[in-house]
Image 1 (cartoon, rainbow, N blue to C red):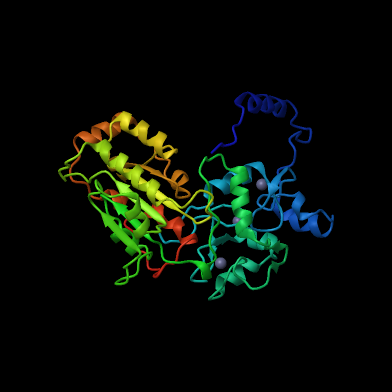
Image 2: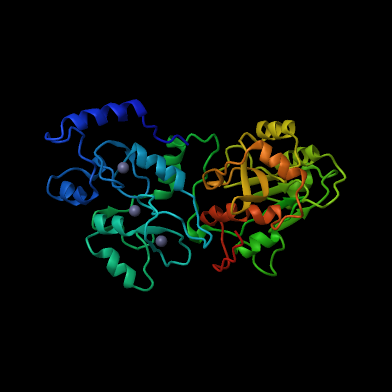
Length: 382
Ligand SMILES: [Zn+2]
Ligand SMILES: [Zn+2]
Ligand SMILES: [Zn+2]
């Protein structure tokens, strides 16, 4: 994701001008001010699409995908970065309007995970609204309310499609984003897991219901003789998970075998080309793949891996490489661990505190936008 880059030279020369002209009014253009949004729209009759509702800037780059109003380029980048970020409590980490993380109001619709910052609510709805909402019980948010308008905040029609269009247009990721699914259409996720199991993790996130998992989950340890017909018969699946064997378990195959088999079965499980059905996959390497294998994985799976780590202070106790098309895996885990550190870790790892599946558990949280979940009680271990 491209972050805005400040030219250090430009900064420097600007400083010199400022120092030399201390009695003159600053030549710097006025900082965008959010508190002027209401004035601009109501008094100066400015179209709300012509200003950034996230920061008040007039340098509009695009339309805000969820609410009427514009968005400047830096706010667009921030929004894309935070779009699918969830906290361990299962709620989104940032404000659904401006993507800032300061004091947040949480939507209490049990099927919604969205949050809003005080400033957005006070600026765009009306001053003092955040305080009132804060004392309310059972507040539901601007995307869940039956009426589309609150003050200047007007929900866009068909915002789910709008969100997808926004992502497809603005994100640099080669991976497709699926349109999020409205609550009444969400079904339980159907999972195929290979080698490593994620039953426990999906259960604790509320994606699998206790006792009634028939038809929604299949786990395979040996896939040597599995053919396309069988996978098609067992399916359809919404999520295919695979991993190299966990540490301490003898593996009877070379590490690359797990990758090839995962890739083979993944092709059988994929929906037909052009299908709009949300379909997710994840392959986790428990640091046993060679550098060449990893390069092959990146080529086959058509995305770069992310390193997810279990760190205790500055000590990395365990780490895995993750290839996945689940949204936000990339922005959530931008851990910088050097390759040397990782190979040292791989050499003398003790049985780790967290299994690979536990390490990647919270990467599944964005699936809440697509599938039914049975329990909101999250017992996170990250
Ligand atoms: Zn902005
Ligand atoms: Zn906000
Ligand atoms: Zn809501």
